[in-house]
Image (cartoon, rainbow, N blue to C red; front, top):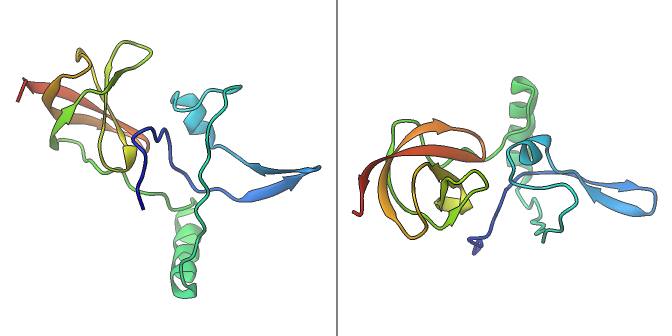
Length: 137
């Protein structure tokens, strides 16, 4: 499956019925982190959960033991070194790079088109922050 570079966020949700509409709820964290803005229009891709019953029972057990639904883990870890290309500038002027699955790395003091070596200093579920340790690799 090909995933667009324009992917803003990725989460699992149930489709519910409300009056005469079907609703997919966007998690609060996506709004709070700025990935999604209320009142804006977005394209949504729905992917069926076609996992087999053994996987479902394992996921179910995991969910009940931790108390939270399992989510994809970030593709980076704190302290990891990455080579990235800044593709965009965020609302607060920081550089934005994307890695696997469209996961965002915020790079302060970087410009669009810059290719930099960064050390990951902070990791959240839907973005990370990387400090430049070498410019123009």
